[in-house]
Image 1 (cartoon, rainbow, N blue to C red):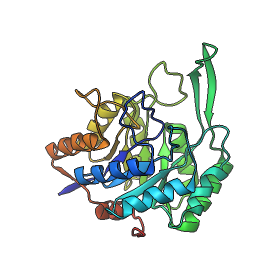
Image 2: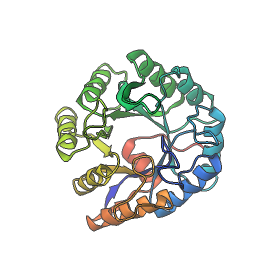
Image 3: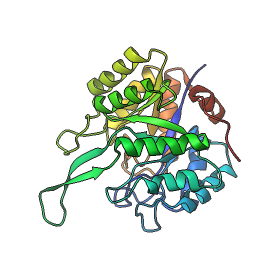
Image 4: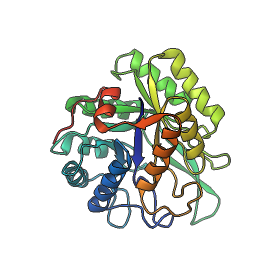
Length: 294
């Protein structure tokens, strides 16, 4: 049976004005994670949030959330390393190194993100940066490898893919068997990144296959593009990510009540293609992860 990794992205950067069911607290996120596990997810991707939905880098949030998930299931846990422009890289390395048990995976953008975001106060647009310099990436990788955490090479465009290849060739990234492929911009949204179209998806993945023929990848996008890219990935043997972070709605469902609804959608589509959702143990084997720490 062909196995597919289905990752649930539970809550990153998503407000409750988009969907009132987005989880923020450790308790809410843990409950959502278990629902997704029961629906067929094998990895959950989570972002620390404050009680009012703000961005957090609190090691205690991650430790508490992870412990509650671990008490109920053996999901692969996947933190973020994304940060706002005013947050130093130590905000990220602090929770990578500061939790009682190391996390198995972190998503690592291989370059900074830039966007001309709407300026809600003054009108027009403003430049918004999600920083990640070479030095920041090296510091994050060092923290990962100190604790046996798998850094998930996240590529939003061919420039980030070139950065990934550079670091892999130099041995700074120790694995070349897996990528997170995420062309997520939309035409006209001001993001300096690749739009999540089928053509751009194949441009990135064809280049991956050229340099690393044995590699696999997990793909996603944003908004309605999420489901186009997911459908292509399912049909062509790749793996996928779905959830509130990527889209506040589902096809034909404008207000899903849980991230588990996305996993139900993904698992049903995968089975139509003869693919069965991977278990967490199978995902660890596919990705070459260390065993889970209780």
